[in-house]
Length: 316
Image (cartoon, rainbow, N blue to C red; front, side):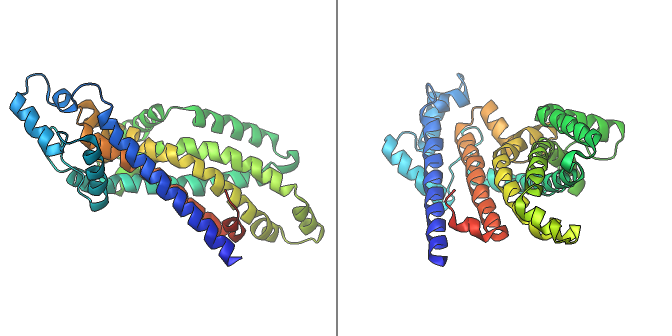
């Protein structure tokens, strides 16, 4: 059993390594596929030929593409991420000064999504099981459907208007304390909470109709024991599996939230880099976002194997 689980995890780690290598290669090709000279595009038509040549040399773009590729690999692996075309500032410094805010948003949003979606979905699923409380079920489906369909940008604007402008309960912009992250994290997580809660409610209804639950009820076991000991582990397995599908939306959602709420994170840095055509900076930041999605999915697999050890020996 342990050897099977070990082989399974080794395969997952190999797949992660291959995926990360593919993402790194694609991020490198981003700079190569830009039509024209990316340095000239970034510096503008008024930049002198000497300045363009100097920046190309600094970035190593005057080298053969194969050498650039291996230098890019070496730079990423050693933390030497190159320099900005526009400012000449090391990309590593840009990332280091901003990644903390983005990490906070991702972690808070992900934890809020998983905990609230599971709690709400399970509670409503139990309350409406066997056709009970049809009004609650209708209201739940209507509300979660509406919230899940709202674009994240519109959700963020509505939150700003209600809680920052009208009620003045929370700051509207910046990252000056824990309260500054409440609205951005809510804007990121709200749609995922609504979507996942609907799925968890349906899963709860299905689990409560399983034979082992019916047997437990026939033994007149306490409801709390039936729900916590028999139903919840299976619900958590399904919720974590489906929650992993929301990771991409949560990670990329920080880009919108950071720009709406003026959070100095790598999401705002990415938009600024794309706007100013600072492609080496955008290249690395896109690599970070893609790698974060892959790594977080592996961490969800780890958590899933803790909740349900049998899943560790199943190939997914």
